Image (tube, rainbow, N blue to C red; front, side):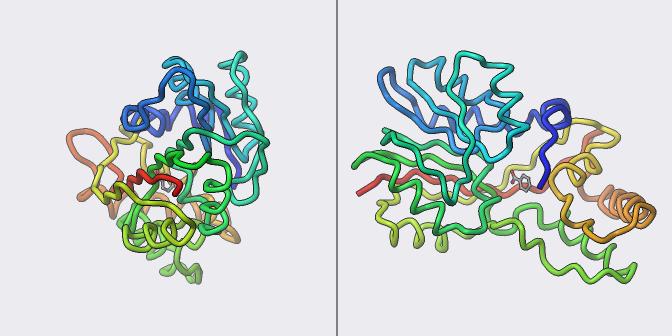
Length: 250
Ligand code: BEZ
């Protein structure tokens, strides 16, 4: 997955804008040390710092980290993968918005989160839950299949149910204090190209091995197919289903 920081911050700022609500759940306190896992371009890391906590932003994309460092030069950003990162600190809380659904090695990531928390430390996370963007995925796969491409499910995302994710957390030594699976239709930024922008940013892997003209035809057909269901009041809406988690290291 290639992240384009310009395209992301221009077209998909809603990712961190919606994340502001999760910072409220985190409720960072002055004096706390917090890890922002999957910090992207750093906006929520900065919001956590603004509330007086010390914060480390971690991301697997050097392009996104370059943008984060450019925007917030006083903050501490580091490169690392959720499933394998090693930091010397032990944190009061780990915060993660819209990242863990990219980590298919879910148990490895959960193990790392647990290891990097101090005893009693909290995990506050939001990720795509079961059924997330189901209509978009079905339309893209359907249009690819019609043209003879054999892509199976979108295996690069992990959208778990509450039961599945809570069980993984408990097995790793977390006490799950809150687990919520809710619909949050998400308005895409551009009224014309919003759906195509979203698929091009986040669904690049649908098109591995697909030629440019078929790719354009699939995108056009998906727009036509989904317009009656996901285009409302002049805006494209993505059918997001979120999983929100608050858990504590036992
Ligand atoms: C999400 O935030 O749910 C999401 C974002 C990009 C790709 C898939 C899901």
